[in-house]
Length: 193
Image 1 (spheres, rainbow, N blue to C red):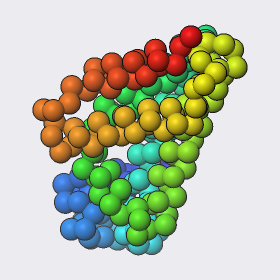
Image 2 (cartoon, one colour):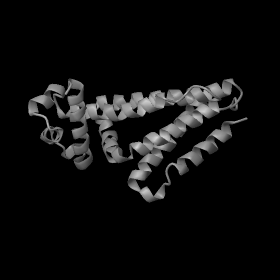
Image 3 (cartoon, one colour):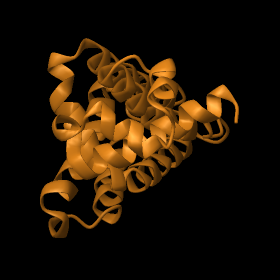
Image 4 (cartoon, rainbow, N blue to C red):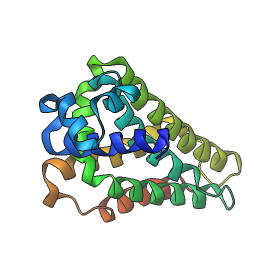
């Protein structure tokens, strides 16, 4: 097994532990046991619980980022924006099994600069892609000139994140992704000329 495969094995085991126990109740020994590797093998890759948690969060966010990069940059700005939001819906659905763990990380973010920075990078990257497509639509005359790309991008991101949070707390209240799609399409329709 390669070093990268061992590292991923540790991250996978730690993810299972974090889902089951949460961040606060999880201990380094739990991660070692779940990995199936020796204590030295785990500490070779991660020197602390905090470092391993950053590894887990990075892995989860990379999955998200990779799928967002797969959106083709052909078609109108509106078409690309819809494709991007549909892909984001898929990401949110695929990450649903990690909702409680992600919520733990959100709670940890204000107190852990590394966690905060990872979330910030993800948000800023997605917001830049959204606002860039909206600006492209304005420049090409597809969207109204009065549209504020940054405000709409922040609103769309908040829409999906808010529904994701609601699904964790009151899962029967939200019909995902249909509620998100309907709301997002209404916002996009309001921007169109």
